[in-house]
Image 1 (cartoon, rainbow, N blue to C red):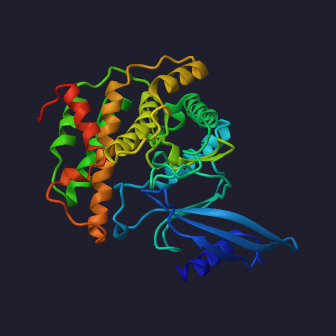
Image 2 (image 1 turned 60 degrees about the horizontal axis):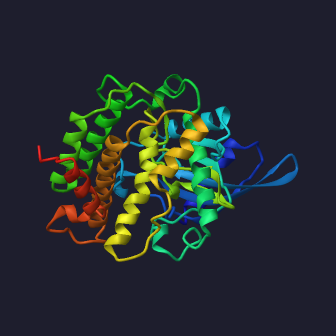
Image 3 (image 1 turned 90 degrees about the vertical axis):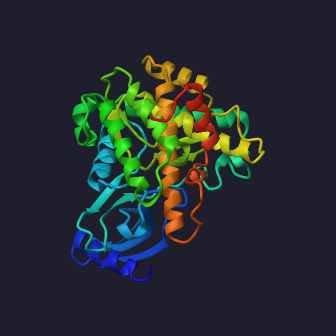
Length: 360
């Protein structure tokens, strides 16, 4: 990290007015909630028009192959453009994006800058519903305010018109006649990537097979955040001030995001059950979220079952890849049963068993 401030300062000097002579103070490296891209947090100071200027930035950095990335592909320009367009076309709070460095020549991998926001984020490690954090300790009224305001932000994203045209660059580059089919093909491809360094998972393959055989008949294509969970939102006074992390953004049915928002909490709740902890069973309930979303949008929400299975499978792929990453870096032993890496395994098993899903 010692060379990073100088590298950033040298690069900023090419972006700022002549004679700016920027300096950079680096504060931290990887975001504690991030499971895919790396973030660098830093301050920059420079001279412009005879005055001292300062700015607080976050650099979103594409992980290198040596970092054992969670995703196979990081389309940094797509993330940048998505955030920029959301900021232009909606009142959904996203950080303002700044300079882009696409070549990788400065830090060894591409990155872009965005304004640093002030606020708090519900923790993922350990999950917020494990206790001992600001969200768990909040009053039921404040927890509900956070829940409802998060749904409002999601509704605002989905309300951006003509998403299939405006965000055409996010359409998954996979086979399929509809956006949903292409999203599912992308999920299958992610699984194949995740198991290159592991044994295959019969449980996830059961889920994928069922999803492919029971695909909903829909052509809807709104902007989908892709990773719509509380750990990707920054809050002030229980209201979102920053909607973050756009690596998994796409276009598709609104139910993809609604399910992910609901199911992410369900995954964390299944983990508290496993450890005999109380959790937050009255928080982020499906009926409350759907009712609030419908109230805000007037849009009908379809049956979420298929989408919950998709979310459960996707969480399984994520756990496989992060598990493989921990094994790769010597942070964990390779288990005899590879599916023990699935932290939500009982939840996924019970969901598939309820559908009488058998192995393909």
